[in-house]
Image 1 (spheres, helix red, strand yellow):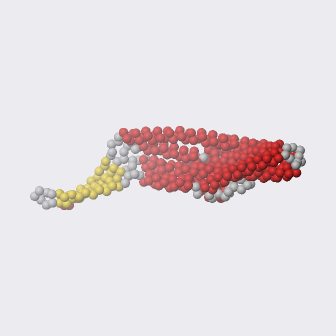
Image 2: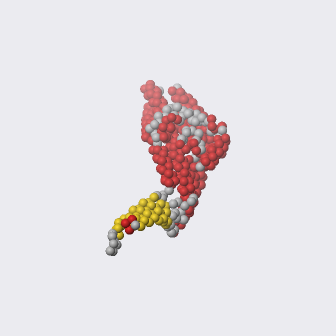
Image 3: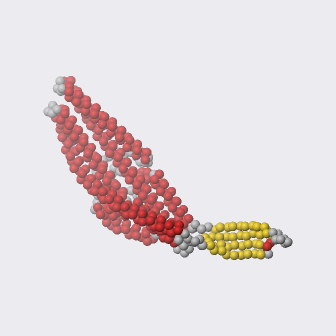
Length: 419
């Protein structure tokens, strides 16, 4: 185990050096408070179940160290009738115990130790997956709130325009069809605002149901930041700390040890016994030693092949897990790196279209352009604002996910001291 820990520390040190600049990288400012996140993660049923699995693994480790053999005690009594002689009451006592052959106890202890290490990684993986779910739900609420806020603003703007058009119609400065058009636009915007508010409440309800320890997100907007470091460094750091991959490696090593144990078990353990008998009314006292050895059959050979096949399957699953995680890490990096530039371009477009919509509104109030052109400009500006806001949140979420997977966002707890 010391070698495993040393190897993990050395690997973490190399990855830390490659990400020296990223250590000081600030997390997105629109995340929930770290204290609330820690309470939410620790209270998750998934994490509590993993802790129960740890207790189970420790108990199994103790059972493997103790071994499956136990002392057996047998007591017999009998009545001897002798023709022409006195009758005698006789009894016998025997104690037996199986003995593990040399090497089996060491393998059992190693199997149990690997089970404990796998349980440690399972806790880390449960915390990591819970944090991922929290992150996704948190930004889902922010996305829904952004849409609801923008549609409320659009409805308020259309309401003001409807008031202006209504006044102009009464003065005879505008056609009644313009008022009908303003009424329709206001009704449509109100409907969209109501639907967006409903989606916001649904997303918030899901967040509160899953993580009641979290406060609701506020309306603050955080500017995305370009991740520091390069893709290779983030990939190395992500794989170095990924609990799912480490759990697969621990499980694979345990399966390989179980294969060796099954091979060793093809030589059965002997059972040693000590017996004492009192016969002929105490005139005869017998003390003896017995040893019994099972004759190995085909079942032990098949068990060995079964364990070998299971280990081979787990080796392929470990390789598949590594590939999948590497692909996910690369995709996370690309989303985080490209998200900032995408947001900047959309933000520039949104600001330009907002200025254009404002000018169109003023021109309409002066009677220089019609209502249709004004509403089109405002609708286009709204869509641009929504796209820019969504890009901003997506960039922040991608950066947070990148930092989370590299263990640079929140402390994921239990298993971190091993890495």
